[in-house]
Length: 102
Image (tube, rainbow, N blue to C red; front, side, top):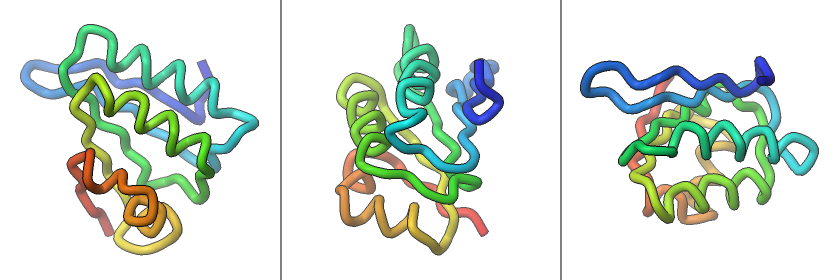
């Protein structure tokens, strides 16, 4: 598994958390999707921490939408920047619970 995408298993009443760093694009979206799918397997909800992602393209957005189709999705995003803007433009902020961090 890539250090860029880490899965932290669910604990007690908390959902599993996928932590992503750096860029998510066509070059690595398959690895991102695999980690998302593992997190979503047998879980009603997952959290994806995007607070340390500097860039993501439409492939990453598609991966997040695909998970949100069958699993409740929570996203952690930075207060400002391209990831926060992308959420609004793509509509991910309407299908996921979004938590903004500083």
